[in-house]
Image 1 (cartoon, each protein chain N blue to C red):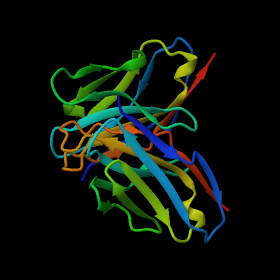
Image 2 (image 1 turned 180 degrees about the vertical axis):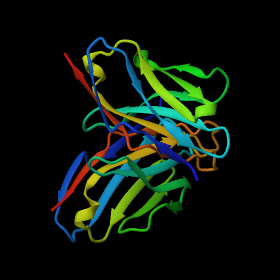
Image 3 (image 1 turned 45 degrees about the horizontal axis):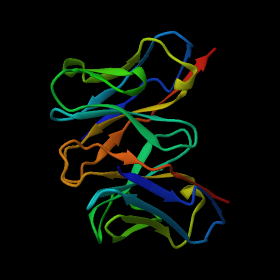
Image 4 (image 1 turned 90 degrees about the horizontal axis):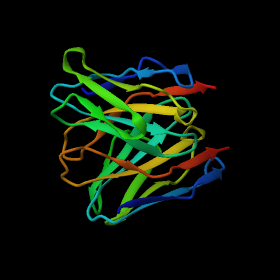
Length: 114
Length: 114
């Protein structure tokens, strides 16, 4: 069965510092992988996605993520965090079914300190 | 371009009252449609998905039901709300038969059951 683990419930970083949010997945085949961001009281916005090819994918807002098959990971990174990046981040894996269902992690809340 | 709407944005309902949340998508045809619930401090739980008019799949047995009366309209309902139905409800759409599993989310509805 598909599953996604985000081991960090809450992370606090200083503005300008680098960021890495962890995501581990369980899936029987090559997965589709996603990172979404959710600002308080808002819907989810797609940051980036991996389907195939280059394992380092670039997304919006300066984010990138690296797919590591050997570690079953898809960690999200940003070299310099801005105060506006404070939000909740969700990792998801695609089930590659006819309905294209996604399976989400429980999220990591990011706090940015000035 | 495609847009997804949800209403109402917020809703406060007494226990035992009925519920109807609406989601509509513009700019695409025959999308896959999804309802998720996000409880406080938790991830996203897929409630229902639909691959076509009148076709509803339920992921979690519960007090809720869904309907798709039109191609781009998805409705979440309940005959009698429970306290545990409180949460943030998100609608999403994806390309039918798409090979990428990408889902795009609406702004959400905050439901409080008192």
